[in-house]
Length: 391
Image 1 (cartoon, rainbow, N blue to C red):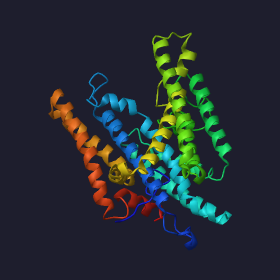
Image 2: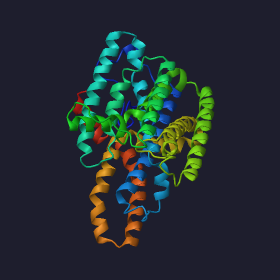
Image 3: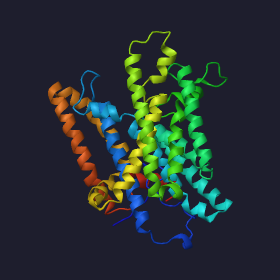
Image 4: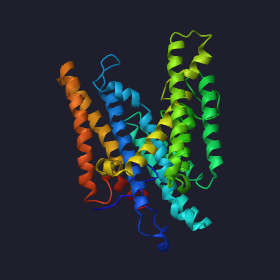
């Protein structure tokens, strides 16, 4: 069976860039590392499943009133699957850097950064092409986050967490000051298209760097051996995240009831309690980040349980073909939505779309398993590496 290992981008398979493999470090993977990688791929699979539900709900849902049978679940997952993806990108980036970091030389890290930045450039171009068809593209944001994250790999843990807190505080300040519509200030001496592009990447886009880059830094921290390879500490991390998640969710529920009909005088305070993933509101960022970390830790735990081995082994293949599934399911949905709306009655439309979604969720697992047993990389994963010249 072909092996596809972890990834610095949860949409891409991870292998070491050419020139970084030290034969002395190429030892067989121990069982604990294998379980760790299986847990990582299992978490990617859960994120893919959530992504398919959210995106199909966005593509096929006729209106807010005409909900699909799974719309409530998709609405609950909206933005949260993406948080998990970004966090997994940070974990994968740290895993990929294990050899250059062990080498301990400036030359090894410089070579590693060049290889990752080449991948980021190709991913950035691919994402901007894809967003011509899909306004909610995340690939070009991943490229930005990974390009920045590669320079954070050697930072001490405390600096990573200072970065997480600083990004969240900055994003919160801007979000509240702009009353829920963060944007760059007017009057900048730059062409309009440059301002619009930078605003999309930094503040106002679906996955703008403030605060989404904080999730990648959290993943970089979790991927470090002293954290990821110490299951005994995972329980404490899980409990801390659970407390943060519960508090954030309670504040969101209270704010929704308290400021449901907020007037202009209450708006500065009400904005803080918005529950918006795009752009991410302060409490959503807290809840989403804590929830994603809990899912990641839970995936690692399940991967070590013999009783869950069958589930983990079957779903992990979905995570290995994340890029192919991500692009493929969006293009499939966009190609089918208009013909289905034109030819089906409303009642039939909802039933057909639900069956289509279930078929895709079930079929993608079988397809991924079939493909991974025969090929080293997925179709788009292979194309990506050829274009970037790194595989």
